[in-house]
Image (cartoon, rainbow, N blue to C red; front, side):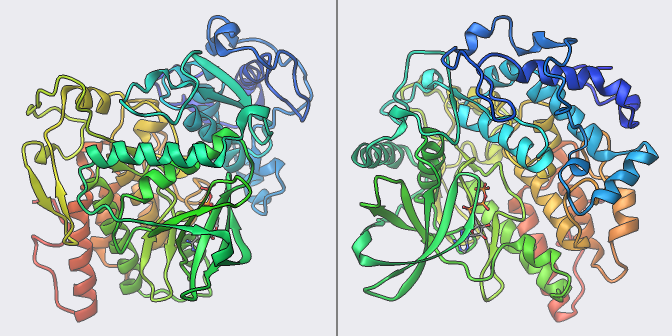
Length: 542
Ligand SMILES: Nc1ncnc2c1ncn2[C@@H]1O[C@H](COP(=O)(O)OP(=O)(O)OP(=O)(O)O)[C@@H](O)[C@H]1O
Protein backbone atom coordinates (compact mmCIF):
# COMPACT_ATOMS: atom_id res chain seq x y z
CA UNK A 1 0.00 0.00 0.00
CA UNK A 2 1.36 3.36 -0.94
CA UNK A 3 0.53 6.64 0.65
CA UNK A 4 -0.85 9.07 -1.86
CA UNK A 5 0.90 12.43 -1.96
CA UNK A 6 -0.88 14.93 0.17
CA UNK A 7 -2.59 12.40 2.32
CA UNK A 8 -1.76 11.17 5.76
CA UNK A 9 -0.44 7.67 6.08
CA UNK A 10 -3.40 5.34 6.10
CA UNK A 11 -4.09 3.51 9.28
CA UNK A 12 -2.96 0.28 7.74
CA UNK A 13 0.51 1.70 7.43
CA UNK A 14 0.59 2.36 11.09
CA UNK A 15 0.47 -1.27 11.76
CA UNK A 16 3.79 -2.93 11.54
CA UNK A 17 3.15 -5.25 8.71
CA UNK A 18 6.11 -6.13 6.59
CA UNK A 19 4.03 -7.33 3.70
CA UNK A 20 2.14 -4.13 3.44
CA UNK A 21 5.26 -2.09 3.55
CA UNK A 22 7.14 -4.03 0.96
CA UNK A 23 6.07 -1.97 -2.04
CA UNK A 24 7.31 1.11 -0.29
CA UNK A 25 10.57 -0.51 0.49
CA UNK A 26 10.84 -1.57 -3.09
CA UNK A 27 10.01 1.86 -4.34
CA UNK A 28 12.71 3.16 -2.15
CA UNK A 29 15.13 0.65 -3.53
CA UNK A 30 14.12 1.36 -7.08
CA UNK A 31 14.81 4.99 -6.50
CA UNK A 32 18.04 4.27 -4.80
CA UNK A 33 19.03 1.77 -7.47
CA UNK A 34 19.01 4.26 -10.27
CA UNK A 35 22.25 4.74 -12.13
CA UNK A 36 24.77 6.87 -10.42
CA UNK A 37 23.63 5.95 -7.01
CA UNK A 38 26.07 4.47 -4.63
CA UNK A 39 24.70 1.66 -2.56
CA UNK A 40 26.33 -0.36 0.11
CA UNK A 41 29.63 1.27 -0.57
CA UNK A 42 29.72 0.25 -4.24
CA UNK A 43 29.76 3.03 -6.70
CA UNK A 44 27.41 2.45 -9.59
CA UNK A 45 28.39 3.18 -13.13
CA UNK A 46 27.26 6.20 -15.13
CA UNK A 47 28.54 8.54 -12.51
CA UNK A 48 28.15 11.53 -14.76
CA UNK A 49 24.57 11.15 -15.80
CA UNK A 50 22.42 14.08 -15.02
CA UNK A 51 19.10 13.83 -13.35
CA UNK A 52 17.37 14.54 -16.65
CA UNK A 53 18.74 11.32 -18.01
CA UNK A 54 16.89 9.35 -15.40
CA UNK A 55 13.83 9.81 -17.53
CA UNK A 56 10.36 10.32 -16.29
CA UNK A 57 11.17 11.36 -12.78
CA UNK A 58 11.97 9.40 -9.76
CA UNK A 59 8.37 8.76 -9.02
CA UNK A 60 8.20 6.34 -11.86
CA UNK A 61 9.98 3.74 -9.91
CA UNK A 62 6.92 2.70 -8.01
CA UNK A 63 6.03 -0.89 -7.83
CA UNK A 64 9.33 -2.29 -8.91
CA UNK A 65 11.10 -5.04 -7.12
CA UNK A 66 14.07 -4.78 -4.91
CA UNK A 67 16.79 -5.31 -7.37
CA UNK A 68 19.58 -6.16 -5.07
CA UNK A 69 17.42 -7.95 -2.61
CA UNK A 70 20.16 -7.71 -0.09
CA UNK A 71 18.09 -7.03 2.91
CA UNK A 72 19.29 -3.51 3.05
CA UNK A 73 15.69 -2.42 3.17
CA UNK A 74 15.74 -2.22 6.90
CA UNK A 75 12.70 -0.17 7.56
CA UNK A 76 12.95 0.05 11.30
CA UNK A 77 16.20 1.90 11.81
CA UNK A 78 16.24 1.72 15.54
CA UNK A 79 16.13 -2.00 15.47
CA UNK A 80 18.83 -2.14 12.88
CA UNK A 81 21.31 0.31 14.22
CA UNK A 82 21.95 -1.11 17.60
CA UNK A 83 20.34 1.87 19.22
CA UNK A 84 20.00 1.51 22.95
CA UNK A 85 16.27 1.85 22.53
CA UNK A 86 16.29 -1.31 20.53
CA UNK A 87 14.12 -3.28 22.85
CA UNK A 88 11.70 -0.43 23.12
CA UNK A 89 11.41 -0.19 19.37
CA UNK A 90 10.96 -3.89 19.23
CA UNK A 91 8.10 -3.59 21.60
CA UNK A 92 6.50 -1.04 19.35
CA UNK A 93 7.13 -3.35 16.52
CA UNK A 94 5.44 -6.24 18.24
CA UNK A 95 2.54 -4.18 19.33
CA UNK A 96 2.00 -3.22 15.72
CA UNK A 97 2.03 0.45 16.55
CA UNK A 98 5.40 1.89 15.71
CA UNK A 99 5.32 5.65 15.34
CA UNK A 100 8.78 5.67 13.83
CA UNK A 101 7.60 3.36 11.13
CA UNK A 102 4.85 5.51 9.66
CA UNK A 103 7.08 8.48 10.10
CA UNK A 104 9.76 6.79 8.07
CA UNK A 105 7.29 5.43 5.55
CA UNK A 106 6.12 8.95 4.92
CA UNK A 107 9.66 10.16 4.35
CA UNK A 108 10.47 7.37 1.98
CA UNK A 109 7.30 7.88 0.04
CA UNK A 110 7.56 11.57 -0.25
CA UNK A 111 11.18 12.45 -0.37
CA UNK A 112 13.32 9.48 -1.18
CA UNK A 113 11.24 7.25 -3.41
CA UNK A 114 10.76 10.21 -5.68
CA UNK A 115 14.03 12.10 -5.64
CA UNK A 116 13.40 14.02 -8.82
CA UNK A 117 10.14 15.36 -7.56
CA UNK A 118 11.82 16.44 -4.39
CA UNK A 119 14.61 18.07 -6.26
CA UNK A 120 12.52 19.84 -8.80
CA UNK A 121 10.67 21.42 -5.96
CA UNK A 122 13.85 22.16 -4.20
CA UNK A 123 15.58 25.46 -4.54
CA UNK A 124 18.94 24.17 -3.55
CA UNK A 125 20.80 20.98 -4.01
CA UNK A 126 22.52 21.46 -0.77
CA UNK A 127 19.16 21.45 0.88
CA UNK A 128 18.06 18.26 -0.81
CA UNK A 129 21.33 16.65 -0.06
CA UNK A 130 21.23 17.73 3.48
CA UNK A 131 17.75 16.42 3.89
CA UNK A 132 18.68 13.04 2.50
CA UNK A 133 21.59 13.04 4.85
CA UNK A 134 19.34 13.82 7.74
CA UNK A 135 17.09 10.98 6.81
CA UNK A 136 20.07 8.72 6.64
CA UNK A 137 21.75 9.78 9.79
CA UNK A 138 18.90 10.72 12.05
CA UNK A 139 15.99 8.62 11.00
CA UNK A 140 17.39 5.63 9.27
CA UNK A 141 21.06 4.98 9.68
CA UNK A 142 20.42 1.56 8.17
CA UNK A 143 19.45 2.99 4.82
CA UNK A 144 22.36 3.43 2.49
CA UNK A 145 21.82 6.65 0.70
CA UNK A 146 25.12 8.02 -0.43
CA UNK A 147 23.82 9.77 -3.47
CA UNK A 148 23.88 13.45 -3.38
CA UNK A 149 22.28 15.75 -5.86
CA UNK A 150 23.36 19.18 -6.56
CA UNK A 151 21.06 21.66 -8.12
CA UNK A 152 22.61 24.10 -10.50
CA UNK A 153 22.22 27.76 -9.90
CA UNK A 154 19.76 28.26 -12.74
CA UNK A 155 17.21 29.42 -10.27
CA UNK A 156 19.56 32.01 -8.90
CA UNK A 157 19.07 35.05 -11.01
CA UNK A 158 20.04 37.51 -8.40
CA UNK A 159 22.24 40.26 -9.61
CA UNK A 160 25.87 39.84 -8.65
CA UNK A 161 25.26 36.54 -7.04
CA UNK A 162 28.22 34.46 -8.05
CA UNK A 163 28.61 31.69 -5.58
CA UNK A 164 27.44 29.09 -8.02
CA UNK A 165 29.59 28.90 -11.05
CA UNK A 166 27.82 26.25 -13.01
CA UNK A 167 24.97 28.00 -14.76
CA UNK A 168 24.33 25.48 -17.48
CA UNK A 169 22.89 22.13 -16.47
CA UNK A 170 19.59 21.65 -14.81
CA UNK A 171 20.90 19.25 -12.26
CA UNK A 172 24.31 17.88 -11.85
CA UNK A 173 25.10 15.24 -9.43
CA UNK A 174 28.07 14.55 -7.36
CA UNK A 175 29.11 12.29 -4.59
CA UNK A 176 29.47 13.79 -1.25
CA UNK A 177 32.26 12.86 1.10
CA UNK A 178 34.50 12.52 -1.91
CA UNK A 179 36.94 15.00 -3.28
CA UNK A 180 36.02 15.78 -6.87
CA UNK A 181 38.92 17.18 -8.83
CA UNK A 182 37.32 20.47 -9.53
CA UNK A 183 35.59 20.87 -6.25
CA UNK A 184 38.28 22.69 -4.40
CA UNK A 185 37.65 26.33 -4.91
CA UNK A 186 40.71 28.37 -4.34
CA UNK A 187 40.84 30.23 -1.11
CA UNK A 188 40.99 33.53 -2.93
CA UNK A 189 38.05 32.73 -5.09
CA UNK A 190 35.98 31.68 -2.12
CA UNK A 191 36.85 34.78 -0.20
CA UNK A 192 36.23 36.99 -3.21
CA UNK A 193 32.89 35.32 -3.80
CA UNK A 194 32.03 35.81 -0.20
CA UNK A 195 33.07 39.42 -0.34
CA UNK A 196 31.04 40.10 -3.49
CA UNK A 197 28.06 38.36 -2.07
CA UNK A 198 28.34 40.25 1.10
CA UNK A 199 28.56 43.48 -0.88
CA UNK A 200 25.35 42.58 -2.63
CA UNK A 201 23.78 41.77 0.64
CA UNK A 202 25.03 44.90 2.27
CA UNK A 203 23.49 46.99 -0.46
CA UNK A 204 20.19 45.24 -0.22
CA UNK A 205 20.23 44.38 3.41
CA UNK A 206 17.43 45.47 5.61
CA UNK A 207 19.61 45.24 8.67
CA UNK A 208 21.40 48.42 9.63
CA UNK A 209 23.77 47.04 12.13
CA UNK A 210 26.26 45.38 9.80
CA UNK A 211 29.56 45.15 11.55
CA UNK A 212 33.07 44.89 10.30
CA UNK A 213 34.58 41.54 11.03
CA UNK A 214 38.15 40.55 11.37
CA UNK A 215 40.15 38.40 9.06
CA UNK A 216 42.51 36.33 11.18
CA UNK A 217 45.69 34.68 10.06
CA UNK A 218 46.61 31.21 11.20
CA UNK A 219 49.84 32.41 12.79
CA UNK A 220 47.89 34.69 15.10
CA UNK A 221 46.04 31.78 16.64
CA UNK A 222 46.78 28.84 18.90
CA UNK A 223 44.79 25.83 17.76
CA UNK A 224 43.05 23.83 20.45
CA UNK A 225 41.30 20.49 20.43
CA UNK A 226 38.30 19.47 18.35
CA UNK A 227 35.20 20.01 20.47
CA UNK A 228 32.60 18.59 18.14
CA UNK A 229 31.74 17.55 14.65
CA UNK A 230 28.67 18.19 12.60
CA UNK A 231 27.75 16.61 9.35
CA UNK A 232 29.89 18.88 7.23
CA UNK A 233 32.19 20.57 9.62
CA UNK A 234 34.50 20.29 12.55
CA UNK A 235 34.50 22.70 15.46
CA UNK A 236 37.69 23.31 17.41
CA UNK A 237 38.73 25.91 19.91
CA UNK A 238 41.34 28.48 18.99
CA UNK A 239 42.92 31.23 21.06
CA UNK A 240 43.72 34.62 19.62
CA UNK A 241 47.24 35.15 20.95
CA UNK A 242 47.01 38.93 21.06
CA UNK A 243 44.05 39.05 23.41
CA UNK A 244 43.83 35.53 24.81
CA UNK A 245 40.26 35.32 23.57
CA UNK A 246 38.97 31.81 23.02
CA UNK A 247 36.88 31.28 19.91
CA UNK A 248 35.56 28.35 17.97
CA UNK A 249 36.88 27.71 14.52
CA UNK A 250 34.57 25.89 12.17
CA UNK A 251 36.13 24.24 9.18
CA UNK A 252 34.81 21.95 6.51
CA UNK A 253 35.49 18.27 7.02
CA UNK A 254 36.02 17.70 3.34
CA UNK A 255 36.93 19.82 0.37
CA UNK A 256 33.73 19.13 -1.46
CA UNK A 257 31.73 21.92 -2.96
CA UNK A 258 28.60 21.06 -1.09
CA UNK A 259 30.20 21.48 2.31
CA UNK A 260 31.73 24.72 1.18
CA UNK A 261 28.36 26.03 0.08
CA UNK A 262 26.91 25.26 3.48
CA UNK A 263 29.77 27.11 5.04
CA UNK A 264 29.44 30.12 2.77
CA UNK A 265 25.74 30.21 3.59
CA UNK A 266 26.44 30.06 7.30
CA UNK A 267 28.90 32.92 7.05
CA UNK A 268 26.51 34.94 4.92
CA UNK A 269 23.89 34.68 7.59
CA UNK A 270 26.06 34.92 10.66
CA UNK A 271 27.94 38.01 9.57
CA UNK A 272 24.71 39.95 9.31
CA UNK A 273 23.59 39.23 12.81
CA UNK A 274 24.22 40.73 16.17
CA UNK A 275 22.06 39.72 19.04
CA UNK A 276 22.75 38.34 22.51
CA UNK A 277 20.77 35.21 21.71
CA UNK A 278 22.36 34.51 18.35
CA UNK A 279 25.81 33.00 17.96
CA UNK A 280 28.29 35.78 17.38
CA UNK A 281 30.40 35.70 14.24
CA UNK A 282 34.00 36.72 14.86
CA UNK A 283 35.60 36.57 11.44
CA UNK A 284 37.23 34.53 8.74
CA UNK A 285 40.48 32.68 8.92
CA UNK A 286 42.97 33.00 6.11
CA UNK A 287 45.72 30.61 5.03
CA UNK A 288 44.40 27.43 6.56
CA UNK A 289 45.27 24.94 3.83
CA UNK A 290 42.81 26.34 1.32
CA UNK A 291 39.96 25.38 3.60
CA UNK A 292 36.94 27.47 4.41
CA UNK A 293 37.20 28.43 8.05
CA UNK A 294 35.34 30.91 10.13
CA UNK A 295 35.40 31.89 13.75
CA UNK A 296 32.54 32.29 16.18
CA UNK A 297 32.22 32.88 19.89
CA UNK A 298 33.06 29.97 22.11
CA UNK A 299 29.98 28.90 24.09
CA UNK A 300 31.18 26.99 27.09
CA UNK A 301 28.03 25.25 28.31
CA UNK A 302 27.43 22.87 25.41
CA UNK A 303 24.22 22.16 23.57
CA UNK A 304 20.78 22.70 25.05
CA UNK A 305 19.94 19.16 24.10
CA UNK A 306 22.70 17.76 26.29
CA UNK A 307 21.57 19.83 29.23
CA UNK A 308 17.87 19.15 29.08
CA UNK A 309 18.34 15.45 28.56
CA UNK A 310 20.96 15.03 31.25
CA UNK A 311 18.65 14.29 34.13
CA UNK A 312 21.48 14.62 36.64
CA UNK A 313 21.35 18.38 36.01
CA UNK A 314 18.50 19.89 38.02
CA UNK A 315 16.49 22.47 36.06
CA UNK A 316 14.06 24.79 37.76
CA UNK A 317 11.02 26.08 35.89
CA UNK A 318 12.56 29.51 35.96
CA UNK A 319 15.69 28.23 34.23
CA UNK A 320 13.62 26.39 31.66
CA UNK A 321 11.53 29.47 31.00
CA UNK A 322 14.69 31.48 30.55
CA UNK A 323 15.97 29.00 28.01
CA UNK A 324 12.68 29.28 26.14
CA UNK A 325 12.64 33.06 26.36
CA UNK A 326 16.22 33.32 25.06
CA UNK A 327 15.49 31.15 22.05
CA UNK A 328 12.32 33.11 21.32
CA UNK A 329 14.29 36.36 21.55
CA UNK A 330 16.97 35.08 19.16
CA UNK A 331 14.34 33.81 16.76
CA UNK A 332 12.34 37.01 16.94
CA UNK A 333 15.46 38.82 15.87
CA UNK A 334 16.18 36.36 13.05
CA UNK A 335 12.67 36.67 11.69
CA UNK A 336 12.86 40.42 11.92
CA UNK A 337 15.93 40.14 9.67
CA UNK A 338 13.95 38.07 7.16
CA UNK A 339 15.83 34.91 7.97
CA UNK A 340 14.21 31.52 8.40
CA UNK A 341 16.43 29.22 10.40
CA UNK A 342 14.86 25.97 9.12
CA UNK A 343 16.97 23.75 11.35
CA UNK A 344 16.01 24.99 14.78
CA UNK A 345 16.45 22.20 17.28
CA UNK A 346 17.93 21.59 20.68
CA UNK A 347 21.33 20.58 19.25
CA UNK A 348 21.60 23.88 17.46
CA UNK A 349 21.08 25.96 20.57
CA UNK A 350 24.13 26.45 22.74
CA UNK A 351 24.12 27.38 26.41
CA UNK A 352 26.57 29.92 27.78
CA UNK A 353 28.17 29.42 31.16
CA UNK A 354 25.76 31.98 32.63
CA UNK A 355 22.81 29.93 31.34
CA UNK A 356 21.94 32.20 28.43
CA UNK A 357 21.04 30.38 25.23
CA UNK A 358 22.22 31.33 21.77
CA UNK A 359 20.78 30.06 18.51
CA UNK A 360 23.43 28.66 16.18
CA UNK A 361 23.94 26.65 12.99
CA UNK A 362 22.69 28.68 10.07
CA UNK A 363 23.90 26.45 7.27
CA UNK A 364 20.34 25.64 6.23
CA UNK A 365 18.74 28.96 6.85
CA UNK A 366 17.14 31.06 4.23
CA UNK A 367 17.64 34.77 3.79
CA UNK A 368 15.10 36.87 2.02
CA UNK A 369 16.86 39.68 0.27
CA UNK A 370 15.48 42.71 -1.40
CA UNK A 371 15.35 42.17 -5.11
CA UNK A 372 15.48 45.55 -6.66
CA UNK A 373 15.90 44.46 -10.25
CA UNK A 374 12.34 43.33 -10.43
CA UNK A 375 9.36 45.56 -10.90
CA UNK A 376 9.35 46.89 -7.42
CA UNK A 377 5.70 47.63 -7.04
CA UNK A 378 5.04 47.18 -3.37
CA UNK A 379 2.37 44.72 -2.44
CA UNK A 380 0.20 45.73 0.38
CA UNK A 381 -2.29 42.98 0.17
CA UNK A 382 -2.90 40.89 3.19
CA UNK A 383 -1.95 37.63 1.58
CA UNK A 384 -0.55 35.00 3.82
CA UNK A 385 2.74 33.19 3.68
CA UNK A 386 5.11 36.07 3.79
CA UNK A 387 7.37 37.68 6.27
CA UNK A 388 6.35 40.45 8.55
CA UNK A 389 2.96 40.64 7.05
CA UNK A 390 1.90 43.24 9.52
CA UNK A 391 4.93 45.38 8.79
CA UNK A 392 4.95 45.50 5.02
CA UNK A 393 4.22 49.15 4.74
CA UNK A 394 6.40 50.19 7.67
CA UNK A 395 9.72 51.86 7.10
CA UNK A 396 11.57 51.23 10.34
CA UNK A 397 11.05 49.15 13.41
CA UNK A 398 12.93 48.46 16.61
CA UNK A 399 13.22 44.91 17.80
CA UNK A 400 12.77 44.06 21.43
CA UNK A 401 16.51 44.20 21.78
CA UNK A 402 16.87 47.71 20.52
CA UNK A 403 18.20 46.87 17.07
CA UNK A 404 16.91 49.13 14.38
CA UNK A 405 15.64 47.33 11.36
CA UNK A 406 14.55 49.02 8.18
CA UNK A 407 11.59 47.30 6.67
CA UNK A 408 11.03 47.94 2.99
CA UNK A 409 7.81 47.00 1.32
CA UNK A 410 8.06 43.69 -0.45
CA UNK A 411 8.45 43.51 -4.16
CA UNK A 412 6.12 41.42 -6.23
CA UNK A 413 8.89 38.95 -6.80
CA UNK A 414 9.62 38.57 -3.13
CA UNK A 415 6.06 37.81 -2.38
CA UNK A 416 6.02 35.26 -5.14
CA UNK A 417 9.18 33.74 -3.78
CA UNK A 418 7.73 33.63 -0.30
CA UNK A 419 4.92 31.48 -1.57
CA UNK A 420 7.23 29.09 -3.32
CA UNK A 421 9.37 27.78 -0.59
CA UNK A 422 9.30 24.13 -1.25
CA UNK A 423 12.69 23.05 -0.10
CA UNK A 424 12.49 20.40 2.54
CA UNK A 425 15.36 20.80 4.94
CA UNK A 426 16.06 20.38 8.59
CA UNK A 427 15.80 17.75 11.26
CA UNK A 428 12.64 15.70 10.79
CA UNK A 429 11.64 15.43 14.45
CA UNK A 430 11.42 19.20 14.70
CA UNK A 431 10.12 19.77 11.20
CA UNK A 432 6.80 21.53 10.73
CA UNK A 433 3.95 19.44 9.26
CA UNK A 434 3.59 21.68 6.22
CA UNK A 435 7.23 21.13 5.38
CA UNK A 436 6.99 17.41 5.98
CA UNK A 437 4.03 17.29 3.65
CA UNK A 438 5.95 19.15 0.96
CA UNK A 439 3.62 22.11 1.07
CA UNK A 440 4.46 25.80 0.81
CA UNK A 441 5.85 27.13 4.02
CA UNK A 442 7.25 30.24 5.52
CA UNK A 443 9.01 31.43 8.65
CA UNK A 444 6.37 29.83 10.81
CA UNK A 445 8.07 26.46 10.37
CA UNK A 446 10.56 27.77 12.91
CA UNK A 447 7.74 28.33 15.38
CA UNK A 448 6.73 24.71 15.13
CA UNK A 449 10.33 23.59 15.71
CA UNK A 450 10.40 25.90 18.70
CA UNK A 451 7.22 24.27 19.99
CA UNK A 452 8.85 20.85 19.82
CA UNK A 453 11.82 22.27 21.69
CA UNK A 454 9.49 23.66 24.35
CA UNK A 455 8.05 20.18 24.76
CA UNK A 456 11.57 18.84 25.17
CA UNK A 457 12.30 21.48 27.77
CA UNK A 458 9.04 21.03 29.67
CA UNK A 459 9.02 17.24 29.70
CA UNK A 460 12.78 16.69 29.44
CA UNK A 461 11.79 14.34 26.70
CA UNK A 462 13.57 13.48 23.47
CA UNK A 463 12.01 14.97 20.35
CA UNK A 464 12.10 11.51 18.80
CA UNK A 465 8.45 10.50 18.17
CA UNK A 466 9.23 7.24 19.94
CA UNK A 467 9.17 9.39 23.05
CA UNK A 468 7.41 12.66 22.33
CA UNK A 469 3.88 11.62 21.35
CA UNK A 470 2.86 12.84 17.93
CA UNK A 471 -0.27 12.62 15.82
CA UNK A 472 -0.61 11.02 12.42
CA UNK A 473 -0.60 14.40 10.74
CA UNK A 474 2.78 15.24 12.32
CA UNK A 475 1.36 17.44 15.02
CA UNK A 476 1.83 17.10 18.75
CA UNK A 477 -0.38 14.63 20.54
CA UNK A 478 -1.46 17.13 23.12
CA UNK A 479 -3.40 14.73 25.28
CA UNK A 480 -0.58 12.22 25.64
CA UNK A 481 2.01 14.92 26.04
CA UNK A 482 0.02 16.45 28.88
CA UNK A 483 -0.57 13.10 30.45
CA UNK A 484 2.97 11.77 30.27
CA UNK A 485 5.29 14.72 30.38
CA UNK A 486 3.67 17.72 32.02
CA UNK A 487 4.19 17.64 35.72
CA UNK A 488 1.69 19.37 37.99
CA UNK A 489 4.15 22.05 39.02
CA UNK A 490 4.82 23.19 35.45
CA UNK A 491 3.36 26.65 34.84
CA UNK A 492 0.28 25.94 32.76
CA UNK A 493 0.91 28.94 30.54
CA UNK A 494 4.26 27.42 29.61
CA UNK A 495 2.47 24.30 28.40
CA UNK A 496 -0.11 26.44 26.61
CA UNK A 497 2.61 28.27 24.68
CA UNK A 498 4.30 25.01 23.71
CA UNK A 499 1.02 23.58 22.47
CA UNK A 500 0.16 26.74 20.56
CA UNK A 501 3.55 26.72 18.83
CA UNK A 502 3.01 23.10 17.79
CA UNK A 503 -0.32 23.86 16.17
CA UNK A 504 -0.80 22.13 12.84
CA UNK A 505 -2.17 25.34 11.42
CA UNK A 506 0.66 27.88 10.98
CA UNK A 507 -1.84 30.72 11.37
CA UNK A 508 -2.50 29.60 14.92
CA UNK A 509 1.12 29.57 15.99
CA UNK A 510 2.17 32.65 17.93
CA UNK A 511 4.90 34.65 16.21
CA UNK A 512 8.13 35.00 18.16
CA UNK A 513 7.42 38.68 18.66
CA UNK A 514 4.38 37.47 20.62
CA UNK A 515 5.72 34.42 22.42
CA UNK A 516 8.91 36.15 23.47
CA UNK A 517 7.16 38.73 25.69
CA UNK A 518 4.82 36.01 26.96
CA UNK A 519 7.74 33.90 28.06
CA UNK A 520 9.52 36.91 29.50
CA UNK A 521 6.46 37.80 31.54
CA UNK A 522 5.99 34.22 32.62
CA UNK A 523 9.61 33.95 33.75
CA UNK A 524 9.23 37.16 35.70
CA UNK A 525 6.04 35.88 37.25
CA UNK A 526 7.68 32.64 38.33
CA UNK A 527 10.70 34.50 39.63
CA UNK A 528 8.74 37.03 41.67
CA UNK A 529 5.71 34.94 42.52
CA UNK A 530 3.47 37.67 41.15
CA UNK A 531 0.61 36.32 39.04
CA UNK A 532 0.19 37.24 35.40
CA UNK A 533 -2.54 39.40 34.02
CA UNK A 534 -4.73 37.73 31.43
CA UNK A 535 -3.20 39.85 28.66
CA UNK A 536 0.35 38.74 29.25
CA UNK A 537 0.08 35.07 29.96
CA UNK A 538 -0.26 33.66 26.51
CA UNK A 539 -3.78 32.52 27.23
CA UNK A 540 -5.46 33.36 23.96
CA UNK A 541 -8.71 31.74 24.81
CA UNK A 542 -10.40 35.09 25.21
N1 LIG B 1 30.49 28.13 19.17
C1 LIG B 1 30.56 26.96 19.79
N2 LIG B 1 30.90 26.92 21.10
C2 LIG B 1 31.00 25.73 21.74
N3 LIG B 1 30.77 24.54 21.16
C3 LIG B 1 30.43 24.53 19.87
C4 LIG B 1 30.32 25.72 19.12
N4 LIG B 1 29.97 25.41 17.86
C5 LIG B 1 29.87 24.08 17.83
N5 LIG B 1 30.14 23.53 19.03
C6 LIG B 1 30.13 22.11 19.38
O1 LIG B 1 30.58 21.38 18.27
C7 LIG B 1 29.56 20.47 17.85
C8 LIG B 1 29.55 20.41 16.34
O2 LIG B 1 29.09 21.64 15.87
P1 LIG B 1 28.74 21.88 14.35
O3 LIG B 1 28.09 23.21 14.26
O4 LIG B 1 29.95 21.65 13.54
O5 LIG B 1 27.74 20.73 14.00
P2 LIG B 1 26.24 20.47 14.48
O6 LIG B 1 25.51 21.76 14.50
O7 LIG B 1 26.24 19.70 15.75
O8 LIG B 1 25.74 19.50 13.34
P3 LIG B 1 25.18 19.87 11.92
O9 LIG B 1 26.01 20.97 11.36
O10 LIG B 1 25.31 18.62 11.16
O11 LIG B 1 23.76 20.29 12.16
C9 LIG B 1 28.25 20.99 18.44
O12 LIG B 1 27.34 19.97 18.67
C10 LIG B 1 28.74 21.64 19.72
O13 LIG B 1 28.82 20.66 20.74
